[in-house]
Image (cartoon, rainbow, N blue to C red; front, side):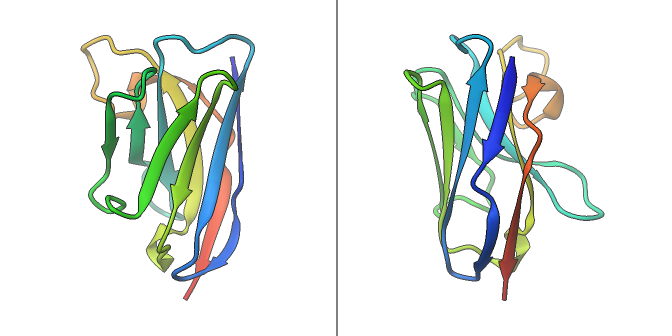
Length: 125
């Protein structure tokens, strides 16, 4: 399975971007799709996750109310709509796919088996 993230770029504070993550190699039935981000000098942090059906969605407190995650299973693609962007949102954003095993939580990187290469989001203040 390959995950290809795209949509990053430079945006002013208060602006919006939409990230996409396209999966290839197989359909991701029963996989949760998550977004993480990593700012320079910081650890990778959880942003959001969505279940296969879309019935389960979680957001980090730092993005709740500003970011919206969605998926199009017919296109094997997950999206992250980012609104009201802040300079603190500047990071490389990674998409990931994983299945629930009961060992790790959705917000933990080991939960995810497949990772995309990352796309850089820079928010200027």
